[in-house]
Structure formats: C-alpha cells, structure tokens
Image: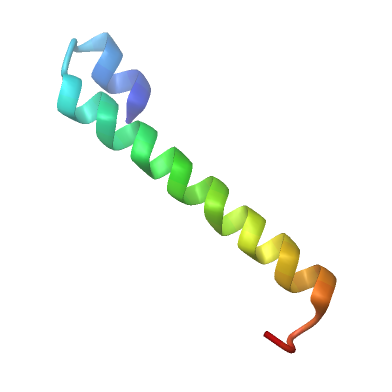
Length: 41
C-alpha cells in the first residue's frame, strides 16, 4: 500500500501502508520473543 500511495500521490494510502508495515514488524518481534521464551507468556 505504501508504494501504491506514493505512485498515486495519495498521502493517506501511503500512511496506511507505513502503519501496516510497522504493525507487521511489531507482530514479528512479538512472535520472535514468544518463540524464544516458549509459550509461557
């Protein structure tokens, strides 16, 4: 979405794409931490 927003000069789509990317990164970190510590969280 970030790329689509840039290509169409659509600021809200670009921002939404960046937010989705950040959300995905946070999920990855959470998954990595949970994986390292096991299921005890």
